[in-house]
Image (cartoon, rainbow, N blue to C red):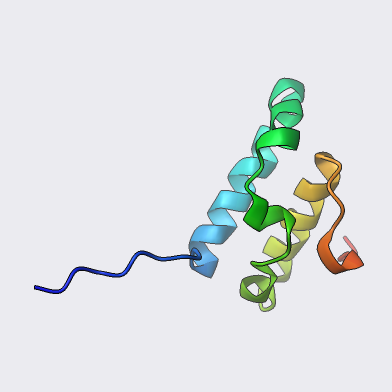
Length: 81
């Protein structure tokens, strides 16, 4: 029996839901303050940006999330809303 390899990066569909959940948490001021310190590094460092290339909505949500928690957007890229 072969055990499945653990995923190092979420798929685009899962990533979309994760980003949306974090963005909704930012609606609450206390949660937004906590996310400034606790947001996963993979969302802040741009390592997942390749998964978002074909999904402008999720990329826009990520940019909005990073702006909400005052984290610079990797590569200085910003999507126009």
